[in-house]
Image (cartoon, rainbow, N blue to C red; front, side, top):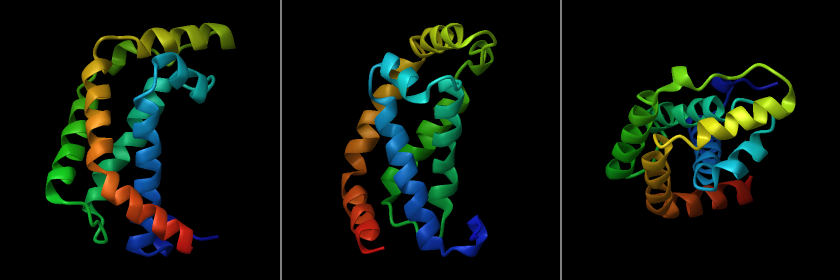
Length: 139
């Protein structure tokens, strides 16, 4: 089985980009849909964790994103790190209580500017999405 370090920089970059894009797309939908897609997992934490990979992605030697897009990713990951995550509890309780708590978390106003950034970043990533799709179509 291959590990992260056994694959090429290009492959690491393309897989990370694909996951980053998927997570950005999830961030742009209604919070109830975000929670539904994440099930009983802590939605806020999952989004923060998955988008944090953007920092490593832009440092990957095979990264072909333009500097302004890399700067936007850096801003987004920095803004995510400043969210009041300690108030987003990860929740105990039964499944229904966790889903309700996750929705409450994702409806917090602090997520609104993050969602705007995600939409703008998806627009800026359109050329990279095409390259990424060609990469996966060929592999």
